[in-house]
Length: 67
Image (tube, rainbow, N blue to C red):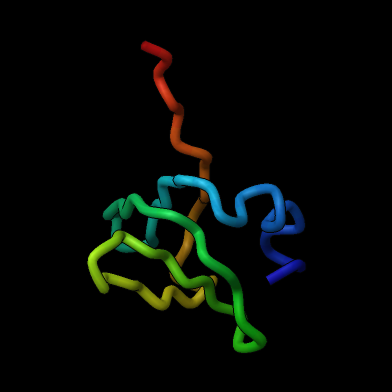
């Protein structure tokens, strides 16, 4: 993953938005990456997505609006 997203550690355990190559977006907490060049995105309540980095266009930290 480091060759595609060298800053991936900046996103670890944060709420993120992930844009995929098919044009969709996913939101959730970036749990980790694995040795197979994929990330695990946790959307809560047992919903986890295993996303190969080849399917990711970008990752951005989701803005937390202050109250």
